[in-house]
Length: 338
Image (cartoon, rainbow, N blue to C red):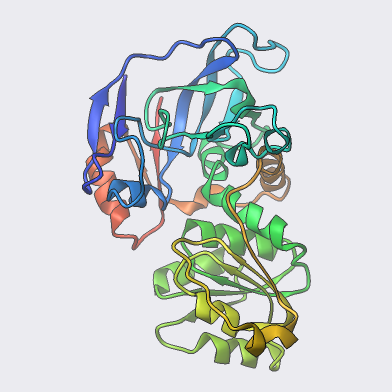
């Protein structure tokens, strides 16, 4: 089988790999969709440390193809449609048992496309603990997005708390930001979407934004003040990694802000803001439990996750696909497999 690898110099290479075989407690998944995530670009350009020999893609989704010994057939059987939580832990520490293998406390965790082979290929080997059943009505493309980008937005909203009847400002309208806009609007928030690209802002209106602001053209703080009668935002989700100052500038008293985007520099002086009674937090992807809940919510509310994708690719188009994605001037891409 062929898989996409990143040398780390802004190029892709398509290499041959042997088809995996499932060992004890493991499953081979036939990949049907593997999403392109914005964080891929950090590895594409070699900005983050990773094993350059592993297959890329940490948003895979597909069907159980082969099951190893020790896997309960009542849980997963050949042909089952599954999502993948792309972090692998020890499965026994308190964080793993709570659904957070990426925060494993007993051993260094493993991440698909960083330490072990990812999903930009025909078949992926994963521990059974990383599998999640896909609800009926969810497409493979949506399941892939929920595996990281859309799931990251869901995790942030769950971390920040209820958004119903709030004014929520979402900075950045890439795939994560659009997903945050979509979820917040579906939960009853009045959403103000912020970006520097009018095309992305137009997309955010399709995903439920009540108001859009191009921060290159207008002061976000002034727009939010006008929209709220000076009360400013109740909730802020910063997904761009570049708008920390603006995020704090629009946050009202008792406001809650969650910072998701990287690199995400945020700075404040306590004396200047302590009377605002803010709650500031970070959010990192989501737990296995919330990944499953996210998928159920998407289906129950008929949310247009598939519409996040503007481009579909075959694995043979990897070089073209990542050159396009690197421009960051359109939507989300996905590799599809028969």
